[in-house]
Length: 359
Ligand code: ZN
Ligand code: ZN
Ligand code: ZN
Image (tube, helix red, strand yellow):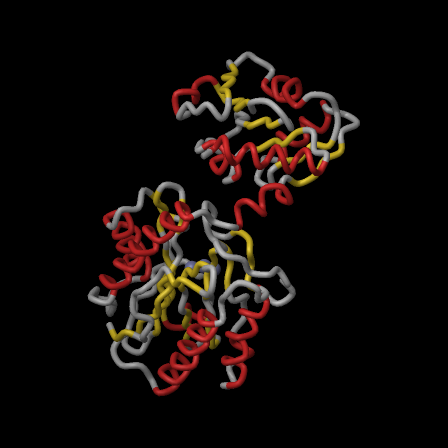
């Protein structure tokens, strides 16, 4: 699998005249090698030339972490070695060097100084077309972790909320994600209650949840590197008429956007579908973010479902559909599913209830 991906990368390099691709921390590296760099001060870098077997330059003490694969060679560097020099030698003559978007600027600045005369560009134009279209195996990995998030959502509906702090429920959600089979989290879970729920990326704190609160719970795990990301909104006790009305609008907007996903339409058209339903109901000013983001090895990656992105959706693209309504000082709500574009429509990976569940 990794040999095949590297082969496609090398073909793209040849087609575009790129003489070296350098990948460090971040998810391009595991995409091509299965190895995730430790994001520390010692350099880890995959050096890919247009032909030949790439080399993974890695601190010697971390070599045992690497799962050996014929797709690449491993060059461990000792503490006293010139690690940047090793990368420079492997990168070859100054040419057109493409660097992964996630790479410490300290490494890049050193490399730029020591390969004078090279032209530098982002590796993303080379990697994006590959990473954006998920293979069947990648979709199954996304489906497995999405199902685990659905199980957590179902268990959440039976949890006590009233009298409990947001931070306490955050801890519970994160433990539940691990119990349901994830080996890690894709991000720190969000629990936002009452007025805090109007802040889309609120991190749960000491606020105690109380009757009438809406509670936005946004969470996801990672299985085999692939991420889940799901949001459900709960209400403590009975919802007010205003909350119930807004949630009904949000639910239909989210479902309309999911139903609009198919190959051949643009990313921005999906954003418009969700936004139109919310605007027509009079809540347009309170839907303050894009409709969604791609997901895979990264919890946020291309394609972004946002006005201005005229990218044409293709089978295999995976992304969130997560409209929200945020009423400052009062309440907030969001519904988020992960969907995959199929040959003729959409596959919604999340199946848990999207209703406003009373807790
Ligand atoms: Zn978000
Ligand atoms: Zn989310
Ligand atoms: Zn999301």
